[in-house]
Length: 369
Image (cartoon, rainbow, N blue to C red; front, side, top):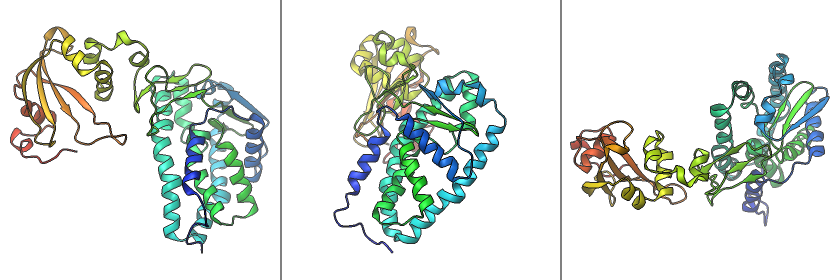
């Protein structure tokens, strides 16, 4: 039983390595990826693919009707998954748990799986999926709904578990030759873009040519796309918040009218931040009605402004300026401008209205999270 890391074992360096793999824009080695996929097929008992079709992005791949309309594809996906589980994935877990103590395994899982998953799955993979499902044409949506949940994910969708079992092996876990060969194949595939296996064909995607992030691994670019693929498919993010292209690339778009027309509170907050509160207050001609300490947020202030009707998209309103009770992981303390009914004249009353609480209850709060 392995109870501690080998001497001079640098877990942090391996964690950083796999995070770097996650965000790499290095060109994909097609030959290595195709060989690795062939290995996966053959070791799972299937004939090797007859062809590999490469696309510049998952959007471009999703329009390949010659394979995505194949009804047998769904059955093959399920069969391949079952084989991978039986001969590989399940045994990876069993062997690691049998050879590493629970405490050490927990340490490795937290460092290599959980931390990596939280940084990449939520900040990158889920955003790409959401963009495809929300903004794409119907054929793309149908393809992605069916296939995105499959285990294969290349750089964004598999490095957390591949890196974890790779580290288990480096710590001293002994896998049999088939599992080692499959793990080696998936280490190569973790350096590819997304890929979607069919019975005779594998649809493969290039990695993005650009990925921009802040120090907390949140997608972030203040001047252009946060993720850019060769064919132009892009995402725009501001400190992890997905925003429309215009918010980042068109300075004239962020103005009082467009900010107040935005229904998403997080996007609206980003637009406030980009424009600057002082400039917004000046250009919106806001007049301070009331200000007070925030009972539910010790040390913060509430400010209630009279909002001019000419800038309103939904009738007479006032605007409450408030500060979030909990900093984000990067230390940022979000600030919000929230509309409230015109008849609300006190800042605390406005905060209670936003929180959907009676005024007397909100006034006695110690801290809002």
